[in-house]
Length: 293
Length: 242
Image 1 (cartoon, chains in turn blue, yellow):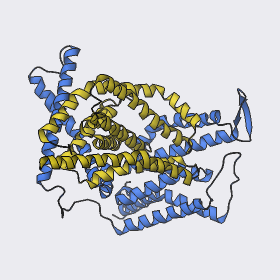
Image 2 (spheres, chains in turn yellow, cyan; image 1 turned 45 degrees about the vertical axis):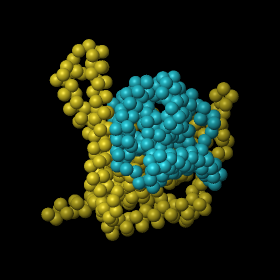
Image 3 (cartoon, helix red, strand yellow; image 1 turned 60 degrees about the horizontal axis):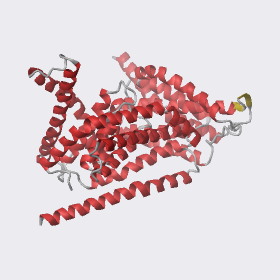
Image 4 (cartoon, rainbow over the protein chains, first blue to last red; image 1 turned 60 degrees about the vertical axis):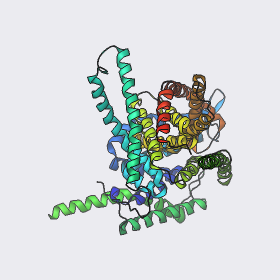
């Protein structure tokens, strides 16, 4: 079930950038329902485990964020009751919930983004923008496990000369621990210079050096990118003409159902469900292939 | 000959410093004001994310255009990796992060630009481990700018004493918390209100204290030994002194 991930990083990035950007922009109830449903479905498809374990954190956050708003904001016309002479309005409560749905959806989108955009894809895209900085980031990512390994090497070596972190008084242990960290940092800096000189010797930064990457921009990537950008543009145009604006204060805007607004709802929904459709399509194809075998 | 080239290098460094200072203290505020007025005071959440990302761009461009040497790249990567590993090691204490301290120490030793890059890289790289989110640009910028300020102060030679480190750590912790709270407030409804900002700041006081305390602790423990190691590398290989 990982068909969507096989697309070119630029397609994936375009999808998430437009989806997250639009989700943060829309407070219209219909849009919120679409956003929330799509975000949850995609999360269940792509990173079910971390999504479900994250829920116990997000549900309370959702409720707290929804409750805080009516306590702070006293705008709105439909007054339900008073707390300390402050009006608690229906608009503020609904707005609080709408806000929470939006924030949670954005967090869910980022969860999917983290599942799909692995560090290699991110660095591939980033290196097109800023090669030197992408190199810094990828070196950083490489160095963290390297340090972890080196720290055990140093700890073993120190053990042989009596600086053991697993024995002795707490003071002694702490002292050996700090000594190991100090050695690690000295080693890391010296090692960095060596790596740098080696890079330079191999011609880093010279002209005419090619780079290798696993990602090939295929026809289907271009096709998908076209669809995403068209839908994004449609939605931005719709927002520009005010079809998607919705006000909670002073009281709820009436929901309009016109052919244009329905068309926009559909275009927004189709943008969001692209990966879901791809996953389902792939699953069907896979199943039919299995039957034919 | 040598004196001449040293003078030229010094001149270049000063120009770069002035250039980056103008970007930070003049251009970014202008961009913010333009962004706010153009979008009619609405949807700060998306706009603030874009502005904060844009704010990092001048640093990245100047780094890119300078064609950095591998030694410089590797040193920044090592310092970022130390702060990422440190953040991972202390992940079990909320808000207790050595990132600001390590970034600041890099800034003290290698100057404002290296400080910014270490801070920003630490944010991106550590969030690759701990999960990217709408907070990433804010962390990039906040840690970056703290490293930048540390670099400016370090070049003046003001950061040698313990008192200076304590003051810097506390102020940096409070600034970090305040900057991240701007995001908390904006993320809530896309708008910014002082009332909500004050509430956010007051509910975040325990975190602010932990940020400040962790900064001071890490700075006091690490500033001298790591600073010496960085100085040693600098002297031994004659680097990053342009």
